[in-house]
Length: 110
Ligand code: 5GP
Image (tube, rainbow, N blue to C red; front, side, top):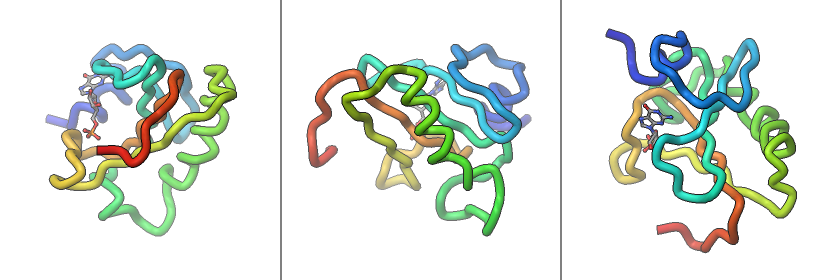
C-alpha cells in the first residue's frame, strides 16, 4: 500500500487543498499548530530531506511556499519547517514542508 501522502496526492484520501500544480500539492494540516498550517508535498515520493535526489519536484518547494503564503494573505510573515528523521519528529515518510503562520511565532522552536 502506498504511503499516506501518496494517497492524498492520488486523491484517494480527502484533504483540504489550498494549492495544486503539476509538481506539488498543498493542503491544510489535520492537526494545525497555528491559525494557518499547510503542508506542501511534492507529488514525487521522496522519503525526506536525507534522500532527496539532485533534481525533482522538491526543487519547487520554496516557489510554491511563496505563492501559497501570498494567496493565504500571510503578509506579516510565516515559517517553513521540514522535519527530517526521528529526532525532528518526522511522522510521515514522504517529504513535506510545513507552512505555518497567522500568529506571532516563537523562536527558537522546541
Ligand atoms: P511530520 O511530523 O512528519 O513533520 O508532519 C506530518 C504532519 O502530517 C503532521 O503535522 C500531521 O498533523 C499531519 N497529518 C497526518 N495525517 C494527516 C492526514 O491524514 N491529513 C492531513 N491533512 N494531515 C495529516
